[in-house]
Image (cartoon, rainbow, N blue to C red; front, side):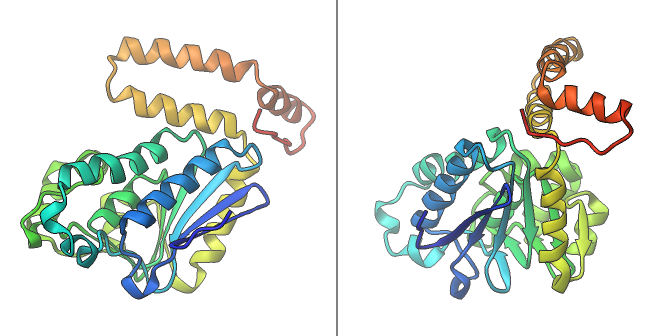
Length: 261
């Protein structure tokens, strides 16, 4: 599969999507938004793929929207339509894809790049990474899902502070606030991310996907509704090949060999 603004590779059940406009700190233009969305769609449909890694080329994850690209056609652009037909499709693709997504945050994740990073299921940040809602500096509100993800991760007060001040939040602070799962030395980020991805790809990925579905839907459910839905999904996983293999491996005192089915 060939793209111009991203790299896409599948190996050992792991799909790696690399935002690849390093000269622009991987700022998103329309083409990169579309290609990243398409890559996630391809990874979701590929039965071989059991885990996805999203990262950036060069020294940053993504600096957000490419404003130079946007400014050149500002009079003809509706920002709302740009969001609805661009970033919203990407964010929905990521959140509804029932395979674990690891965001390997290798540098600045700003603006829309921060929103895309927050849409990953697991975030592993390099120790020189940082997060920033830069929107107020150009008189805009946060978008690309940041208003939904960030208060749920770090609370309203901290999220609103980030939006108002547009200050960088370094990786160590992001970890303390619960924005990321791990902070690792920058030089070890690829190796540590690969180990996480390998562990997830070898795991019961059907259960991982349905867990993601259950947790995402629970935001809009009462407790009774969530319990009922949980029981429904547990019935599905309980009849799966992975569940049977997990039980047999436990009884036989060996490591399970999950197939994701």
